[in-house]
Image 1 (cartoon, rainbow, N blue to C red):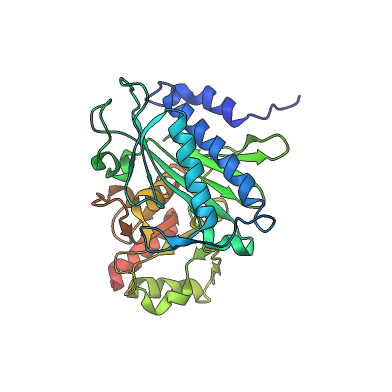
Image 2 (tube, rainbow, N blue to C red):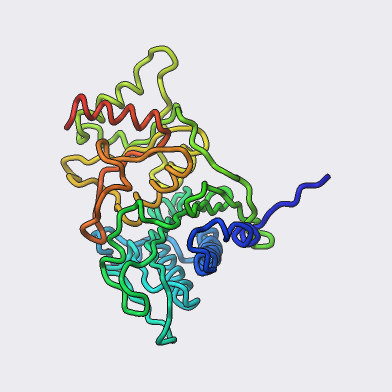
Length: 336
């Protein structure tokens, strides 16, 4: 008997009732992200053939040089989410402030805000290395029908109602959760449809991969240095394997499938950490916990951090439960 392969659209409809805010809006929102991801994927796959790689010539609010594809992806996601009249606000890594979306309907009841990193790891585009999109979704906390406020975006990660990412690699995958497990969908480029390929994704509780930019070793806290040495020592089942791509989405995706840990701690050059809490760390941490993983800054659960600003940076340690717990033990013992 043949097994019917389920599309992302079919999966969304079938599982809509399991979402506690089952009004259909979130389903339409995920569908909008799916559409924008397909458009961005098409452009990413043309890199090197048309003029879409290289620097755009401007810097973003982070002080980072924008790549042409950064700007393209940012525009496409904002356009798609805005025109389909689903969300009331968007915050992006590429924008100085949040965007308030005023529906043409004066009595609009849009309840969701989206925070997004449109093209994570875009500096890798020029060398044909995997990049991705990360998104986080919250229900607004200010009154429906009024313009969104900063408070709608500055919510703890534990308040997320959905989060996900798209990885543009050897195949393009959309992975997301609405708080009831993590599922991955692979794009069939011939017909432009995402199919369920990785149901109920789970982190192995232990892993052998550690992902960290060891070029910053001497800048790391003492606890992190000790943990890296622990991973390198030859004893029993060790040494562990070092794998670092430099695209958060790609490193996280591999580690979730194979078992591993991703580390981007603070350092003297980045005293608050490097990664952004609201549209990088929180959505990835939410996915990790839904997939039996763990995430923290070395001391505090990522999803418990109370945001104070839109582009806030934090140290980030995320992956297989036992590996993250081991890092936390090293941090407790050896500290900064």
